[in-house]
Length: 187
Image (cartoon, rainbow, N blue to C red; front, side):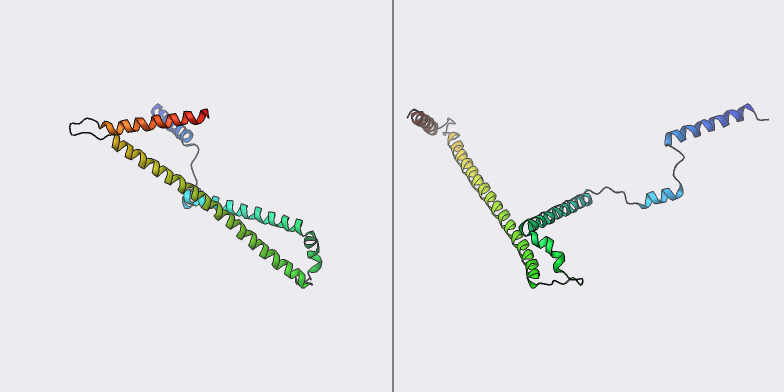
């Protein structure tokens, strides 16, 4: 017969095992599952994710571009799309030399289209840079004017009093500018 002390110890062990089981979420991993989990490289690497995203985005854009070109070629030359099967032998060679030239011309047109788009992008970029350069120059000139004005306004005499000459000139300039605006709006 078991003693009361052993029963209570046994109950405590079972209770602790139940608690651990529920706390840890099950019976644990098998040895094989644990080894597989450790072997996998689950490190978070944003650079790789970014590269993959960029790769898929580029592939998607290329496919769209190819579809668009295919549609344009079919719209421009519907006989080419229909007559392609008729002009090709079982060996894959063209019957007409003109058909071969058409294929070469389409490749050249693709290249020309690419060059044209590239030139347009370059022109747009150059225009943006020119606008930015002009704005930067204007900003620098305005800063230089403000700096010169500030230096004049902060000048002091030997005794520490402000030099009134520059302040009065500034007041005179602002009054003249305001009278010009008022005179310009009345006429």
